[in-house]
Amino acid sequence: MLTLCIDTAYKYLSLALIRDDQLLYGIDEECFKHQSEMVFVKMQELFENAGIRPNDIDSICISDGPGSYTGVRIAMTIGKVIAAVNKIDLYTISTLQLYANGEKDTMVILDARAKRVYVGLYDGIDQVIKDQVCELDKIDLGGHNLYGDLYLFEKETRMPLISQAFLNVRPSWHKVENIDFITPRYLKDNEAYHS
Image (cartoon, rainbow, N blue to C red; front, top):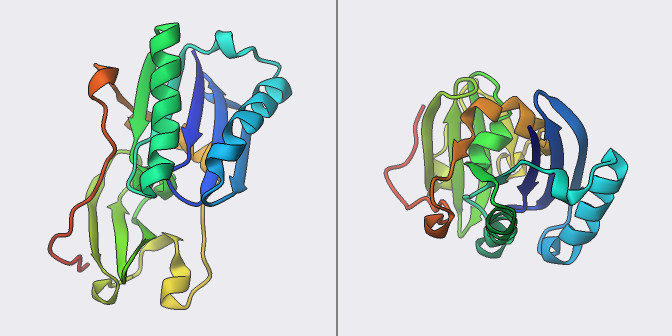
């Protein structure tokens, strides 16, 4: 199976072509608020460099948030249209789970603005412990493996190679049964996370 993967939910434009259990080609570029301008140019580059025609893909996987309101919708719209027109399967993955890269005891922190953060805590590929939005000053980093906007805690920001992460978390992709009802994943404010 040949899958096109797209993440535009946050600061990055990440694309991947995955055939079965192999990453054929990936593109990862930071282009916050410019993903819509670059996505089709980079998709063409992706297909050309992988030696694949767009009509050869059998499925699509997109990150469905949380993240930028517009960013989440870029990949979602492209994924829905391609899946509908070509009658192929569409899969989704949480942006936080994608960025956790399938690693054990991992916390992902993304800036949600207004002194709030999106927080995901994972223990391996399909073990979601917690996904939520909470106030920045309520976060306890503990001894977790960390990814994301760590500059918020005066640490160096660290991100996985997102195109490779799509393959690493493949067992956690969720098949969309009806693409007409797919919606972005938004996390609502709730009780602060403590670990």
